[in-house]
Amino acid sequence: MYTYAGNIHIHSSYSDGSGNIDEIAASAAAAGLRYIIVTDHETLAGLPEEGIRHGVVVIVGVELNRESNHYLVLDVDRLPEGNEENPQEMIDRVRKSGALGFIAHPFEKGSPYIARGKSYHWTRLPEGGFTGLEIWNYTSYWRGRVTSIPKTIYWFLFNRKAAVDRPPQEGLALWDDYTNRGMRVTAIGSSDAHAARVRVAMIPVEIFPYYFLFRQINTYLCFKEKMSREFSEAKRQIYAALREGRCYVSYDRLYPGKGFSFTAFCGKSGEAAAIMGEEISWREDLCLAVRSPARRSEIRLIKNGCLVCRGDGPELSCRVAAPGVYRAEVYYRPYAGKARPWIYANPIYIRS
Ligand SMILES: [Zn+2]
Ligand SMILES: [Zn+2]
Image: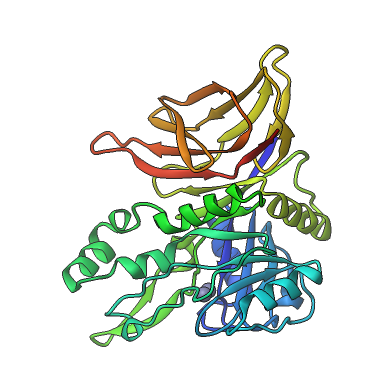
C-alpha cells in the first residue's frame, strides 16, 4: 500500500485566492505534498494549468454556488451550473455527467467579526447522489471559532493549534447518518485556502498563507500501486481513490499522518481482506486492524456511528462480531494535556 498526502479545496487568483497556480504548487512541494486540488469559485479557468508542477500533481476542479450549498466538483472539463435553490438537482446532474461531487462545509458557522457574520452553510442537505463530504475544513472551522476579539488575537498570533481542536460534530454525525442508510460516502479534509492579503492598521498581513495551510488538515490517498509519474494516469489514480473512499483525513499540525493504516484481515490466515473505502462480506474470522504512525495514540473504532473498541498505543485490532460500517479515529496524546482528534479514516463497509 502506498499513501500520498495532498490538499483539497484551494482558491487561486482565478477567484478570490491570492496566489497563482504555479506559486501554490511550489508551496505544496515545500510542504511535502504530492497532489493538490484547486477549486475556484464557479470557474475552470485554471484547467489549462493542470499537470505536474514542482513534483506535485495539480488538479483543477470547481466550487459551485455562491451564497449557500457550496459543492466541489472534480473531473469535469466544462463548467457545470450550480443550483442554490435546489442543490439536489445540481448533485444529480453532476453525478449523471460522471464527475465527482463533495458537499463543502455543510455546517459553517461564520463569525460576527468576519464578513458581517456571513456563513456559507447548506440550507438543504441532499438525500444522496454525491461522492462525499468535507468533515474538516480548516478555514471554515477557524472562522466559526472566532467569537471574540481577544480569542482571535490569541489564536491567530500565539496558539493556532488551540482554535482548530476537532472536526465539527454535526459533520461527523451527518457522515455516519448517510453511511448508516447504506450509502458509501467519502470523507475528506481540506484547507479552503485563500491566502487573503489584507491590511490591519495599515500593516499588510497574509491570512493563512498556502504553505501554512498545507501543513494543517490534509487528505491522504491510499493506492495499491505507486503513483504514476505521468499526469493523466496519476490524476486517474487520485480520482479513483477519492471515488472509492480509499483515503483518510489527518490534522498534520499535531503529528504527520503518514504511515497510518486501517485494514480488515482474515483472522486465521492473516491475509488482507479490505482497506478503508472497500466493501466486503462479513465472515466469522474477520478482524480489523488500525495502525497509527505515533506511539502516543488513542485509537477508536466506530461501528455505525458508535464507539465499539478503543485502545492506547500505536496499534489496535479487534474481531468483527457483526456486519456494519466500521471507521477508525485516532487521537494524538501530547506530552501534556488531553488526547486531541487527529486522524479520521474512511469506513470499511462490512455487509451481511
Ligand atoms: Zn465554500
Ligand atoms: Zn472554498
